[in-house]
Amino acid sequence: MPFADELIGPDAARALFRTIHAAAPTADLHALQGAADQLGSLALRARADLLREALLTGLPGTYAEFARTIRRAAEDRDFEGWLIWPATSAVASKALAEKTSEAFDDGMSLLAELTGRLTSEFAIRTFLRADADRSLAIALEWTHSSDEHVRRLASEGTRPYLPWSVRVPEILARPGVTVPILDSLYRDDSDYVRRSVANHLNDFSRDVPDLVVTTAARWLDDPSETTDRLVRHALRTVIKNGHSDALALLGFGPVELEVEGPTLDITQVPIGESVEFTASIRNVGDEPAKVAIDYIVHHTKANGGMSAKTFKLTTKTIEPGQSIDVGRRHSFRTLTTRRYYPGPHAIELQINGVGSGRAEFVLASQWADHA
Image 1: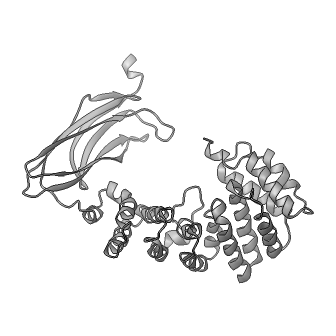
Image 2: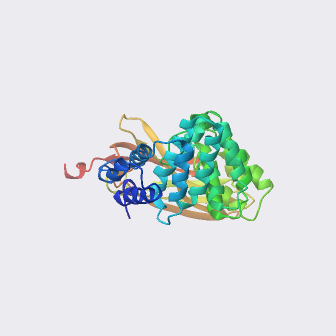
Image 3: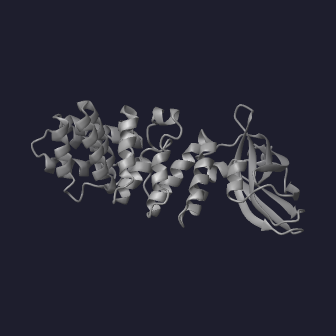
């Protein structure tokens, strides 16, 4: 499997040149032709930007002329895959440079035409940054398209925190401005579209978690047979963060429990090794207790402060008087996405969003064992 930066590689650059050259054989495409040799160690978005600029250099005419060339190129079956990112990005740049409503609307329409060949979700951000209200109105119309790729573009392209993309300040400054798009799509027939809707709603967890819960609650009041699954996926972050209303929405309300633990197998853990914890949970109430059990690892940071990360453990229904045992071995093996620092750490249980028990240990330098 290629690294992310290699998705837009020399092969994609050459395919973009070939298809554009066939559509505009008299155009001076030297910059685009040479771009395949200039990708080097550039990151993914920088590669898309390089090809976009080379494409714009080679097709310097009006937006209408540019759009005609792109549509002719799209008649070629090879005009698909990762070359679509720089192509759609160039469409957005060219349309907005024209500064007319006709170019704006046609540029958005062209993104919808091309999105099924990979995705136009990155390019739509340029339109959103230029005129959020106009772009969102068009995206709302897309929610009624017969093409699932276009409907997904409406949701995915307008996400507050779309991966690999530029942020849209106005969407972040106006929490909920995209909710009408989600309201139109949450009962969509396509799982492809619904996954995007769930991820979009989950994005709000970072800034406005209450909006995630109130929106999900509305959907559950007017559901389809797929709504429950979508909502569970959309609530995953607020659930992990112990949001009490989100937990209650899924049936994880207050419960009467007696908890023993967590208990650790060791209290000094070398970086690169693991610690195992166990706990016993007993329902001391008179009703069955539906529980979402997570555990929180409290890490020492580089500056000596503490940060917490929550991990899913299990969900259970515990009958009155019943006890269950839970446990997990947690690794502190260094990863490219996480670095560990020696010092005090702790593991804490979280049951239905409420912390319960805390066991402390020391994460030691790998060299400590050999001292």
